[in-house]
Image (cartoon, rainbow, N blue to C red):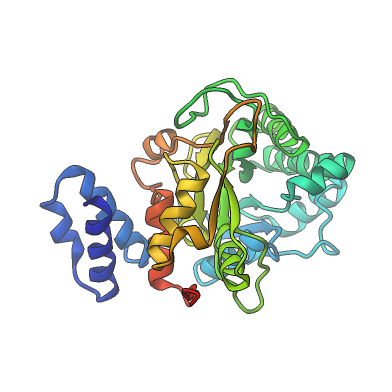
Length: 344
């Protein structure tokens, strides 16, 4: 029933109906869906961050950075240096660039996010995923600049606790990427206590001209259907998967957060195989043709990366608000050019 109501609200938003008045009279849990439907359409998009006028975005040519830059370029003066213009792993380069450009805020998105690559190249991962954060934190502290940067839900990949995970639990990541992100969090908070680390989930989007696209849930799904080769999805894995548009919409609010570590993305209470089944149903595809349950992966313990968004929501006064994974996938399909045709 809830998903059907959410679909109705998205349809109304698509047709420019004033769903604020409709949602105000709805049960409280449905008001959440209404708020998201408005936000995804951009109705509640806030193009203002107080005194912040100029933002340095590192990694602006990447998957996340290019989409953030596109969304914010009409609202702020953006600094989007290439690697040749700014080596984020060099403290000297970072300090020189900050002194010369004097941004009001830093959104540090440059990173190596491929976990497999980080396992094979741990020294490079450390340099990019830890040292660069230290450099940004030092510059932000010296010049009294707000720093927001992306950590990862991979810090939770060694946890045994069930259910949505909060930021205050102990973590023990099991791969280099998660270990380095956790180390970067600790060092950033020591150097610049006002900095904000966002533990982002796995993200997805459709390919866009001029923007980087990497392997993600919806593209993998599309390719599997087109090739007639079902994918294996773990039944012992729980994780949120977030539409990048929802991430971008919430970015401006993160600059108002008190310093600290925050989960940042879609919640999800079902396992990865169940998520794939629900996505197939949204697409009108027989789940058995695209998804196979993998009951053997993660044999030692259930892999739970499922996050709770309570802290960020409360700290932002309710402004940071994400659709859950299934709501996001439905909304993405309702607005995307990606359509996965059913195979005969």
